[in-house]
Length: 317
Image (cartoon, rainbow, N blue to C red):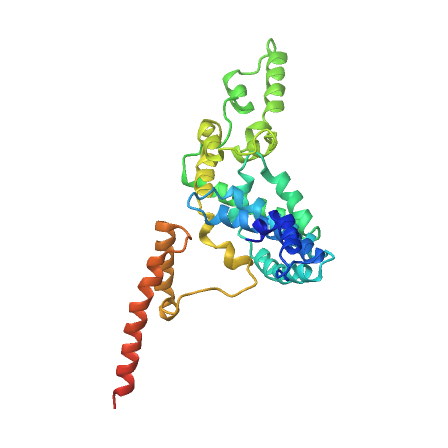
């Protein structure tokens, strides 16, 4: 609504000239505040639609969007407009609490985006809080390695590169004699020199490979990448499939970053927590987060039933 009104700014000015009864023309300061407010809220609108839409994105998208929200809050917390600065500061309080408990699993999903990997996540952490960036990156990498090792342990041991024979195999297959001693030593040194790569896991190889350029791949099928490279990365590709398939709508962004309170219908507010969770999850899976007239119509019979029960209880001796 505000965005549409800004498009007709000149029209409102002409209206005040031709219609003397029009007395509510916004001032220049109010127009400027409206523009800043739209600039501030538009990213939240876009990100909320991305998270809560019917076409759910993969989990690698989540980290970058939350990071953009943080940069936006930092920018407007120090703006000249006192009202916007106050709004951003109150939202920052909720964001800081949310950021402290940020899911490492979703951060792992971002690492498994070949356009990001650990490098971009480290830069993002530094932009948010340089003091804790190294600690968070180390914690993320350690947990990523633990999870990968768990996948490898549950599968056949095929996560190491074993195409080159080990030095021990070379020695046992070719007994050292005076005539071919120099040749065997040469083969041994060559095997030892390349044997370092044998200890690298698929996770190490993936992280060391160059990142894809985000400018060249602004929208990229990350799941397709892991499907095409499954023959190269083995269990890491399976881990990526599981992590990237996590629905990022598990925590609704409306409640995570809104300065208001959560909204529940009076009927849902009386249900047990397990029943509320089942109802909300089922509804979101079927319809997304769009409002439905059916919900409003269904609430009235429930309210009448509850009122009848209360009336019956009050009439009992």
